[in-house]
Length: 115
Length: 115
Image (cartoon, rainbow over all chains, first blue to last red; front, side):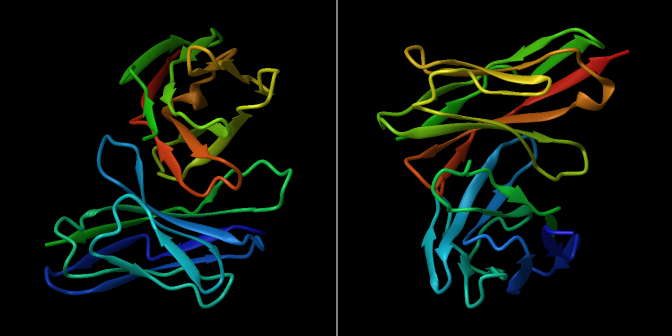
């Protein structure tokens, strides 16, 4: 089955540690995204990538970093510079083919808790 | 700057009745798209429906329809014949131009379907 996988589902870290969240897709989509969701709020865009080896900052990129070395993979690193890293993180991908609805397909999310 | 406003934090609807979830958007772009996503308690985001700014007819997908009023900058979601499984958070979102890369989300509306 095609889809997006994120691992792990729950992640616990100590303050001051960097942590990397995994995101893999087998939908053959060019574009991939990372969002952050805080309780009772909508999603905020952290980073997005339109194509391999290229990515752009979203609205809340400070304290985060990404890489896009393969089409299938878009890992997100939450660095110690991120002031409030505890949140629900969602990865998504979308097609970029002209004429297609640019809906985003989401993974199940990773709930990160930093203490 | 783009902004999505969902003014209903919570809504109740009786099973089998229709419900309208409000969404207004603020953009100066000529080309844009509007989405609705559903987020059950599991956390995963599910795409429901899409409307492009140049689409003259309102989008429909099964029990979902999008009431698009361009002059009023509103894109309300109508769910007909509500089911218990429709209880979830619903997010309105918008992207700029083609490709849908930089998407912004509203704060969401929690829908409760009563038996």
